[in-house]
Length: 451
Image 1 (cartoon, rainbow, N blue to C red):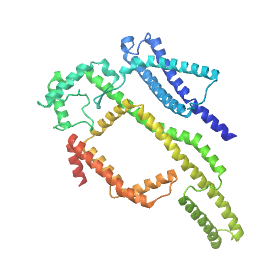
Image 2: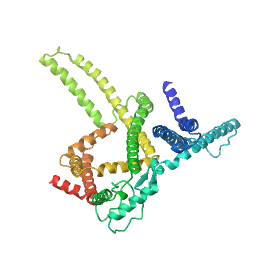
Image 3: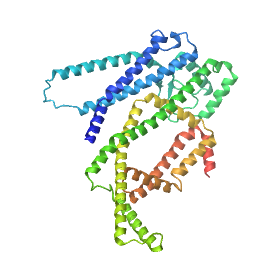
Image 4: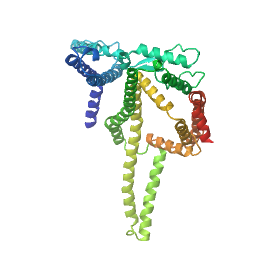
């Protein structure tokens, strides 16, 4: 009865997920509307619609951005969960629905959902143009850029780039104020580090070509906002899968698997390796009992007493390995739920991914040449170096134990013989194709340190 009650509660909770997530998004939209009505005369949260100072406006913008994220997450969960529930509730087309009360209830519920969605769209439509926008798959615009002369800044940057290239062909795509471009972009004839140095010298010699104080402050604000968004998104990518794994495993999967094992007591070991390991442990325990009796560490036991203790220990080992099997099976399905949650976050955060990509590019290509060479050597020696096979053996053994799989030595040897080689080839191609053009000095330093 407890199991049926747990299953019913879980089913009700899953069925109510669309309504619960939509209510979360709706409440967040109400909070945004309340801020607009109370402080900005019902208009968008902006400096133009109020007489507050910069600190107050920044505070309200931070609040609104937080509520917008809640709206986005709530709508994403609403759409995904509603899709799965609709698929699971498909009825046979030959059935005739004659329950008018059920039809009327469904129509009322649909009307309420439409009203909430319409209200959410009305509130969030004001802020869609202020979100991060993608330009030519490499650059992005943050909310402050629209308020600080975007066109003038782009013209200034294009002029500097044109003068520094000394008559080279100007790129047809708009340039970007970040001097550290992504490695996935096309490289020019000259290394980017050389061009960036020329740009810096040009700006210091010619005051007219340099950035104004307002543009410098705007760049700092965009960099700070980009860093904040990137760190929050990284934490989200880590916390959401881990939290999903623990919740689904603890409250959903473990009770179901435990109930199955209780109804099938003959199932103890989920693979032969665990069974042999249990036999060795039990044999070792019996040998210890007899050995301690022979050397006088304990009283000598008769064969019946030894057998009783061995039986008691066998029951304990059975429970331990049954719990280990339950945990391993739960890990398999919980990891699937975690992958689904991770994929959902990725699909609903394309703009955040572009911000994170630019943030990581800036960190990677902003390092000094010795730091780049040190990280490359550390990575290669750890994963594809001379001692890496031992590390891969430990990783494969841990993965097999995590999923309750029998360890296969042939598969381990084949994996170690192929995967590090492929990884080393990809790394060398990246060094030759991208890093060698973006930072040749880092490649030279890497070769000197690796010799």
